[in-house]
Image (cartoon, rainbow over the protein chains, first blue to last red):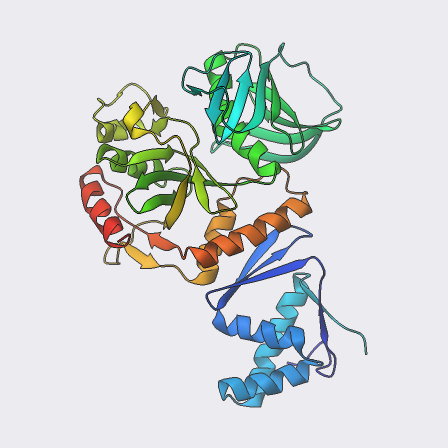
Length: 96
Length: 299
């Protein structure tokens, strides 16, 4: 499925999003609507790379090396991950 | 006005609280004042409605001017400043004073404490030789019965339903009351109350009640029993923290500052005290075996 965003962009974490890592997993709080979400260890790794990399593509490259996984698979998972986070108002894909 | 020890506070009250321990100097000040019955007002701004299981209204949370208002339908309106612990109660027509007092202790004070920046969990807690064991869970999950069974075996009660954890990760004693379903009363050696469907209140003996804070030792999250599965398992990090988040008392869901502070505190708590999932069979006959399992995980 074609992506609704460019992998050349970076994501910005909403200032109203709080995250806490506990024992390798994460809990996210969206202060706008007081919704809580859990991330498993893989989701936590995706969040860590995504929120600190200059572009989404750069995060994918790091994760492909980290998990020794095919880049296409990582891109597909990342697309779903970014869309899910954006849909919940936790991140925004920054303008170029 | 008499003063009582409750949740680490020194509560001044213009009515008697026979279930509380008198205490002249105890902790931060709080107050309870009984006022004339509530008058209807259209100026209240409601922010949260919590119904009973049958859909009838149970609790409405709102603002009345600058004050917070908790309306327990058919019982009373409780007013207090946001972040404050000075509560005025205006009973509903026909409500009994016992019911007003119990709603204040069981439901209003934990929420007022939460709004004042403290963390209170839907949980029971007992003191053992190793420290405080906290049993977190939904209503009906068995946390009161479990706490009562530990007290019957020599532990001291810290709280039956609302557990206040301070910033040093100590459990602060709430008030000395067991609230048990009639069928669970034999756990404390009381006869069942066959003609009642309400929780029954029983006071622990003085030696079975802890009056000062106890360091937290273990957190157990109560979950439904699944035959064939282990009764106790380690919770994953996110699972443990989400369980605490779900069971934290909150007053005003629109208070973002408080939600953020609570989130950070529960994160620290989850990291420092990895929770265990406790999914035991809900039968009185299994309680002793459950205690033994809990003790194995608490040594």
